[in-house]
Each structure stands twice: as C-alpha cells, then as structure tokens.
Length: 256
Image 1 (spheres, rainbow, N blue to C red):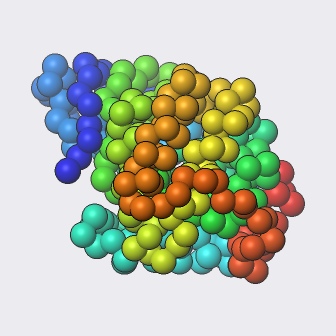
Image 2 (image 1 turned 30 degrees about the vertical axis):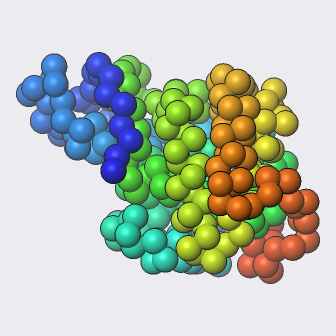
C-alpha cells in the first residue's frame, strides 16, 4: 500500500546546470504519472549535492559498510514490505541545523548537527533511519511543485519531502514493526519522536509545524499501549552502542 497524497504539480524538464541531464517525457504535463514524479524526485538529489552551500562529508569505507549492513538487515528481515535491490547512498551534510530526509531509490541525507547533538546513540540512529527507509523504498512522497532553480537548498529539499502528520503517524507504526522484525529495539522509536518534540525550536526547519510532532507522540504512545508496551520513555545510554557505530560517528563529527 502506498500512502501518496496527490497534489497539482509542475515538473522541471531541465535545470540551469550544465551537467548531463536525463530527459523526462512530460507530454501529459497536466496529469503526470506517479512514476514520473518519483523518478524526477530521485534525480533532484544530485542537484542538491552540487549546490555550493551543501558541503558533504566523505565517508570512509568502514562507515559505508556499516551503514549498508544496517540497510540490508532491515530490508532482508522485512521482505514482505520491501522489494528494492537498489544500493543505498548515505550523505552527511555539514550543517549545524538538525535535519534528515530521504529521496526515492534509497538515498538518505543527514546533517552533522543532527548526528552530533541528537543521534549519538546507535538505537536512536537506526530508529530514525528506519522511517526514511520506509519512505524511500515505498515511495511515500507527496506530489509538489518544483521550481526550476537549477539548485536545491536544504529548505527546498525539506519542503519537497515533507508529508502530512496523518501519514507520518502511519509510518511511525510501520517503523516499529520493521525495527522489531530486524531484531532492533523498536521502542527506541518513541525516543526519536520525543527528541524532536522536546526540541521543537531546534527542529523547526525540519518539522515546520511543531504541533504535528506532539500529535505523533500522542498517537504513537497509544499504539504502543495496544501492543502491550508501556509508553514510558526508556533512558537512552549513549555508551550502549557498537564499536562500529562509534567509529562511524567519529568519521562524521571529526570532519565537521
């Protein structure tokens, strides 16, 4: 099941960039197909990364392998949900503002500010990533207008990938089951929601409407109660992570 809210949209045929560009067949521009939009949104990531303000940290091979292993573990243990064989791409942007987003075709973006300040624990990081894996592999994106600027800022990317709170609430529930089936502590997802809710000022660019995350926490606690789980927040211990995670985190924060 795909949770895609349909909006009137306009597509960019060519950006101002001089790089080789894939040609999109938008002959029926008034009613573009869902696949056309998803393919185009996936391509936007390359424009975002080439924008001079978006400085990307280079991951070492150990970090790439660590992240790919998490991604593969989640997909392989949830084959009923995922069918993608696309190799994941992880991008870490030098930015103090905490944010993350995904694009179709297994593309994941995190800011160094988010990693350094809020995702210093492995369980929290995997919980946040699980929701983005769901979005990327199930193509859960709303059709929105894309302005042909030739470059895409963080603000623009977050606007393009933002979805309604009602859809996020359903993703939260899916993320719980995906984490549980993969052998991770699924209750850590509540901590991820609460981190955002307790720091809405810091997450204002990412969240937009702070009331939405409060609603998410309320509904997720009710969901946990239905699963027979007490919705009391578990204390996150930053030292309770694997050595691989710490080496990966050091790869990110040491180059900020």
